[in-house]
Length: 86
Image (cartoon, rainbow, N blue to C red; front, top):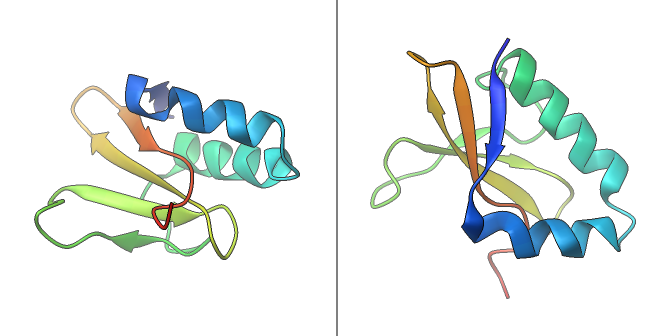
């Protein structure tokens, strides 16, 4: 089981999610990240450079969670949890 930590860069995104209809979807993504951050579902994809080592998982069509996995420490660090179109 992995531990999920929210980086400062994603804290404002969490406030947006809290006041939207995406809370349930976001919680599902978090649960999946805790269990297996590499599971190929929920729109999982490895991001290309310059974001090497970063992955994303869809919350919905527009919004996604961007994260880095530290397998040695079993930690998933979330860097973004909102749209990259804004």
